[in-house]
Amino acid sequence: MMDLSAFETLLVHKNDKVWSVTLNRPAVANAMNLKMVNELSQVMDLAVEGGVRVLVLQGAAGNFYAGGDIKEMQAMAKDRQTLASMNRAFGTMIEKASQLPYVVVAVLQGAVLGGGLGLACISDVAISDKSATFAMPETSLGIIPAQIAPFVVTRLGLTQARRLALLGLRISASEALSIGLVQQVSGSPEALEKDVDRLIKQVLRCAPDATAMTKALLHQVGNVPMDALLDQAAEDFVHTVAGEGREGALAFAEKRKPEWSVT
Image (cartoon, rainbow, N blue to C red; front, side, top):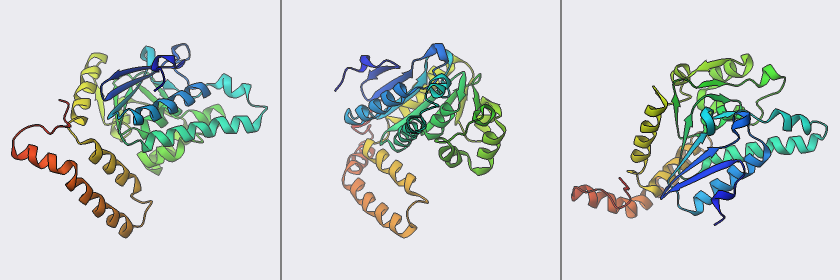
């Protein structure tokens, strides 16, 4: 496995089965460039190899992620193919993030803009500081939310996605909670840290294989014919009952924590 300290745009902290990844371009509010896209994709793959159960995404210096690096985009503007490839690379990364077999937690503070909002939308759980601000400002900048739009629609539904994308609105953490963009808002940075710790402990109470298979099942809803989906789900159910389900049942009967539980 590569040295996790070698990344230029990320800070990666490992704590057994929990990895915390900090987007680390604070001078530009963690705006994402192609280097960060590639490094995030690498970290996600390494986390799979390392048997990670929780990946926490957060931003340095009080901001989560203030959208794409506009200077880098403009520098590529004359090379249409290169610019398109860079944009598509972000889409590939965010799609990978959405499909990861472990739980992805987005910890949101400060600016959560553009692609940052997109990353929040692919997380399994998003938790926010009350001071966070959310927006899809692309149309107000003369561009489109090309790669994040499908994920925003999936998370929020077409009506809310239209409102955010077509008006370029900035919304508060409380409104983000009300529309389902985030699942929890913490009252302070200190409370946010404690809430994230509680959330991680809850995730680690759940069986890793069952978690991965459940996540894959949920992603197939609406994309696979129902009969085929339920047939596969039945097969997966048998697999879990004969696998982690044995330990789960035994732990329940013996009134103890199952062996996968870290807490």
